[in-house]
Image (cartoon, rainbow, N blue to C red; front, side, top):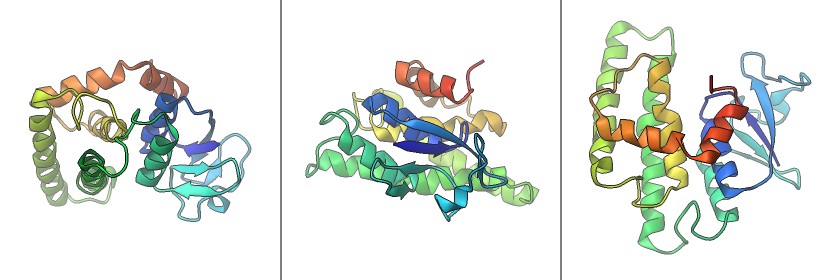
Amino acid sequence: MKLYYSPGACSLASHIALREAGLPVDLVKVDLRNNRACADGADFLAINPKGYIPALVLDDGAVLTEGVAILSYVADRAAAGLLAPVHGGMERYRLLEWLTFIATELHKGFGPLWNPATTEAARAAAVDRLLGRLAYVDGVLKDRPFLTGAGFTIADAYLFTVVGWAGFLKLDIGHLPHLAAFQARVAARPAVQAAMKAEGLLG
C-alpha cells in the first residue's frame, strides 16, 4: 500500500492507524500547493482528483480517499478489536459517532483558522464554537483514557491529529487539562512516535 500524505495534516491519523495495525505501507509526501508527489514530481491529481490528502493506494491499485473511510479500512484489516470494536455491537456505533463528530465538528471547525482570508469576526466566532466542542471532549475524557473507554481506537488517532493543530494555530486550550493529558498519552505511544518521526514532526 501507499499512503499519500502531508506532514502533520489529517493524513497523520491514517498514518498512525497503519502503524498501530502493523500494516506495511510506503509513504508518499505530497506538495499540496502544486499537487505533486515530492519525491518524483508525479501528478497527485491523477491519484486523487479531489486534490487533498489522505489517499491510500491499495495493493490491487484501487484508491481509497477520505480520512474516515481509510481509518475504517485500516481498522478492519488490523487484528480483531485492536483499533475498533467488532461490527454489530453498540460499541462500534459509538466509534462511528465519534468519527463523525471529529470530522464535522472539530476537523471542519478548524477550517476558518487556516484560511488567511477569514475576517477577525469570523475567526472569533469559529474559535468560540471550536472551544465549546473541545470542552465537551475534555469533559468526556475526564473519566476515561480514550474516547470510547479503556482502549485506543482509530477515533483517538483522528482526535490526536486534529487537536495537534491548536499549537500551530496559536489556539489556547490550556484550560482543558483532560484533553492535554490525552494528547500526551497518545503522543507517547510507540506507533505515534514512529509516525511523527517519519513525517519530520519531532525535533
